[in-house]
Length: 320
Image: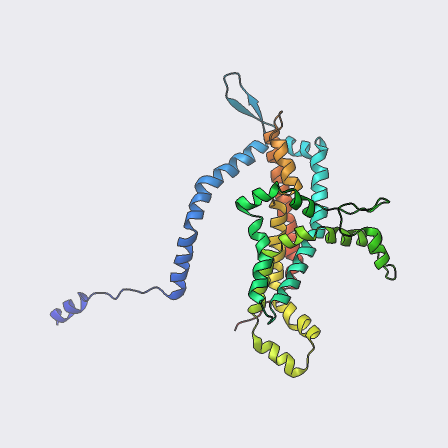
């Protein structure tokens, strides 16, 4: 009896095999491990020093070193009360954002709906609309930054006064004549004219959003559309009753992405102004740190507000 117990006790234990979900989770952590290590050992110290400098003044010592003098929120107050350029640039950037975000999201959705149809050369058209994203990044983007023609096309303006527009595609007076029979205010006409004249820049910034919308549209089951056709629903009704609710989570993703992309773009006026302040004397580096963190908190607040508003109408399909 004891021999049997010893034989049973000495039997090798079976090795537990991790489930598929656990193995996928481990692979995911392994994939982002280099980023986590870099963030902890490289970015976190930089972030900590940036916050510390924003609450201090730097005093250069005679021996070549420096020391920090704690001033509290003085740098933050000076950014708004002393440096008038930062406040004006920030307000102008926020106003431009109100126009750019809807234009980019709506245009990318419109293009994605067209490219999702069964048309000849669909793959080629998708590549063509994504080419601007490639051309405006990396080395090619730096080369194009000095391209006079590109600058003229991307910064064309309109005339809203008495003089005719020189570089704009469309003037406010022309749009006013188009909307003469409609109850449309002058401010709306100026906004539409500004969007039309900056269509080159808007198309350049729609590539990523277009691909995300395409992925969302292709994830909708064709059987749902077949059911709509059997019930006799029109294309308009199908879009608002099926397509739009199904891609509403994608709209939220694209709005958040577009806000971040607009605020962190190299052509962003606020980012350029903060970089200029950093190179200025008289504690410009600590002042720029305070401006950067103020700008960061404003961006986070705008993202939270946009996400909260859109999330209230987002439809999430249950997969029970």
